[in-house]
Length: 285
Length: 311
Image (cartoon, rainbow over all chains, first blue to last red; front, side):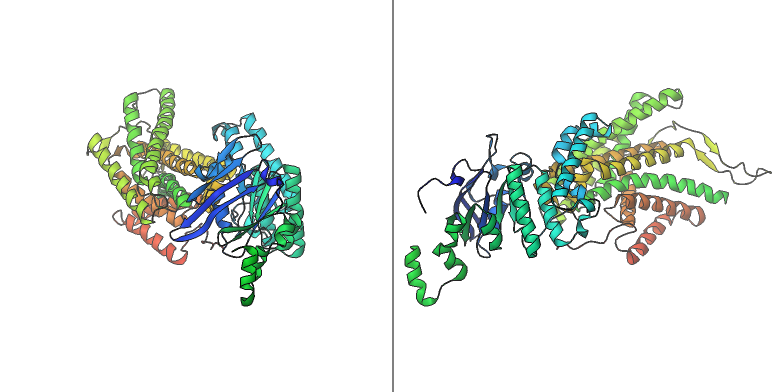
């Protein structure tokens, strides 16, 4: 790796500093530090059980990290320490949104309603916490129309507009994945965390997903942090790749660098017994 | 037939009161999966708050009608607001600290909260029955007892009309609130996946508090109606009314708002018809038997949705 400044170290949107997460005796993440570049797509990869989802859970307030800092810097300059915030404020104030590996839509609600829930906060403010809304205040009507417009916009982008009034649970799997991204985008995030968005998608859907993510980054100034196993997605769209293994960062750089990093190859493919020494020497273990 | 009509009117009136209380049970169950056993006592507190307000304002049957209507609306609004504070407090003190604890813990504090409320009212207001002279009397005679005047006279009192109309209006308002407003949407979202709702920026704790507040406000309406209809309350009315309303919520399918309304109506009707045609002593047995039978054949209740396993 050269010593030149990397794009993600210059004004990063999220700085993860010395993050450690222990569950009793199990160290899920150990002293992990990396930056998520503003306006970039950062991929977090690693073998199963490497601690990728745990990182997401710390970032989005599911877990309180044992040690470390998570500094979210919004484009306006405000800084938030995510590890100290209650979960709903991470979305409402720090503007971090996420999706799940196992999709978590509100299955009993319609697709449109799913997107409207994501705009709960602006609507509550506009309706004076429902009271004004019930009396038909004009500010509320305007906000409500805007919310529907925003939802429509994302439904069009994700190709779900024709099914807006169907229950979310009735959608096929690939559409549910896209709806989850649309819903996350409706919160107006500056950082979008996607946990395996391409899992279970066929090649065509996977290509559409790449397109959607590129669009989000380009048109909406949203930085993306994604966990992905599908290397075609990772290598094609990410600007920056961080590799975890057993909770420790083993590689960090652009896709080309990571692809050829012997640490990564060893972690993913393993090595023959008689090569262990050579590889260990090479990677400096 | 006339007798049947009379029982129908009485049953719908009683069912309306049960339905209003049942909504509180069903909403709380829907959102945090817990039976709020103190809800019946919140209803009782609502009735007492209403009684105190009525006595303070010095209302009586002699008050001019125009003034009386205005004053009763004021009493209704104030009772809803004050009882809502009680509901909020119970949630804040007895349930929120235990959220995330094991399932039985909030159930135990619910029973504790119920006993606390009962005893508080018993000590502060006395254990005796509190009578209230009827404020609204009179009504319509729907039949005149036949040509010889010996038949049954069907009465529809103004009070019954007020109860039924208020209930219908409130239920319509509530259905709108839950289905169409942002608050209702976030409540339904919390019902399905609280953690996910929080990740979308919904303040889950506040949403749950508001659910308790709404349930308590409706219970206060039921309390006022009960007070005006029966004219006597004591610190223990919350227990039986609470059990009945809970039964109504389960019968209709707990977690379902229309289910609670339907369940309340059915329990009210079953009770009244049973007392009217068979025996007053066994009316509770009849209501609970029907519940048992329905649950055997439809475990989710009449309008409940079967539990969907999360993938």
